[in-house]
Figure 1 (cartoon, helix red, strand yellow):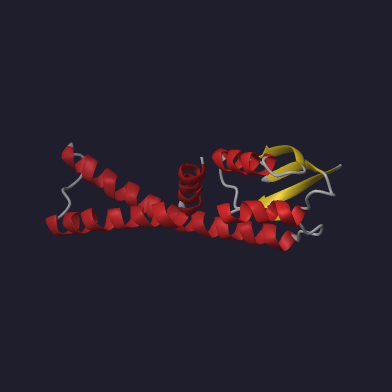
Figure 2 (tube, one colour):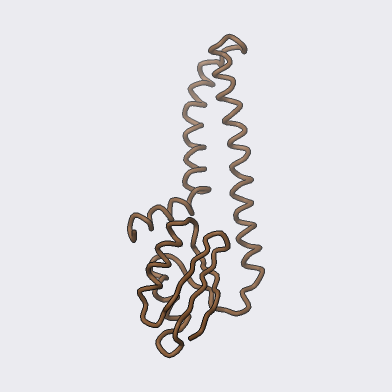
Length: 155
């Protein structure tokens, strides 16, 4: 019996961890699976004669996850993930600040604390703000939407 800790790629939420754990425990030869959503790792105790890390990874790949089997999982991948997250956050921050400014202006103008927004600007912003929210929802929030989809599909 061999006990190893593997990094899981594609795990974004606690339900992802539950789906992966449930799938891996059903595999013949896998005796104990402990998922850690915080570190995106899985401690797996398995019988080497019945299964292998590649087989385990093959079982969860159709669900959208993968087991990082390489011993020398490079720091480049972690740095790349961090860079991608930073790009998403830093693209959403200006949109949020702009939205707060526009919404505050509109609210303050209703109470007479600032001049009214010209109607053409108001109409423009009423179409622009939902487009900006759509970007944040579907681009920045893509990992959460995929996790929710997997939860609905696989339980």
